[in-house]
Amino acid sequence: MRLLRLATTLNSTSAPYNQFALGFKESIDQTFFSLLKHNLVIDKRIKAFHSNGSVLKMFKLVKELISKNKYDVIHIHSGLTGVLFIFALFPFRLGVLKKTIFTLHNSWHVLRLRNQFLNFIVMLASSKVCTCGVSSKDSIPKSINYFIGNKIQAIVNGFNHQRIDNIENKKLKKIHFDKSSKIKMVCIGALNQTKNQIALLEVLRFIKIEAEIIFLGDGINKKKLIAYSKNILDPTIIKFKGIVTRDIAIEHMLEADVSVSLSKGEGLPIAVLESMYAGCFMILSTIPPHKEVSPPSERCFFVDESNKDEIINSLNYVRSNLKEIREGRSQSKEYSISTFSVDNMLAEYKKVYNSICEDNVQY
Image (tube, rainbow, N blue to C red; front, side, top):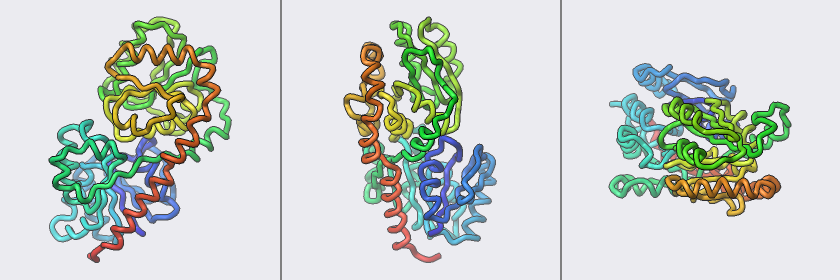
């Protein structure tokens, strides 16, 4: 099987690369095309191209790839690259759309209006549409479902537990948290309004807690969050480390006592799945995707992200039960693998790929 994968980015946090391309690296002949320039070393079993951020260049290169190669499946991971792909097919190769699958990687209401429009166009044109979980599927408005409901399928996101095991088994000497820190907490995600890191910082002005909190990620709210964090007094230590590789993010998870996500919206967050398997106690907002993950109750505290008292209660719970939290790190592992293994996810996508191949019309 020959597959063309289209995404906006190919980097250390890119799900289309980390979960999909790497997952199929040994079983499918893949070509990965991204709009933005790659910023990591690509596995040699995956052919990779990019257009360095140029929409026009991507249009031309994708058109060339389609004309010179006979792909069995085209997997689209973003509305923008999907629309560019459709234009590249026009007018003589529109039959290739019968070979396309589109994945919605987020909940619908989290998307900007422009991206909702682009995604809708690609959903209409694609042969199959998959969402990253049931919550993502349920978030699509009924008005959109009216047009595409017959080809939508929810496939729950998966994470690569073997990658976490390999990193843990290396027993790296580097320590990411201060040895003197009483409670070690990590927050992973883009620094923006949706990820809502400010909600955690706000409550830390009302509670004194001996903790070190590390934020991994970058975004438009970075300066605001750093400025706000300077108003938080000892004994709380707050650090912003920016964007790090996936392996380093996992190292932080393996070292942390607690992983916090007070997000207002998600698809089905890989970082939450990885943190859960790595042994972190989870403090999660009550959004549907987090509820879909639903970690074992003894390893998770759900809070209303807009309710300061609930967030404070969760921090007090961690402080009072830190010994038990550390002793129970392994309790979520079996649940994580059985429910959210990347192997399960890839097996479902392979079925979709095979169904597209069976229905293909030669072009």
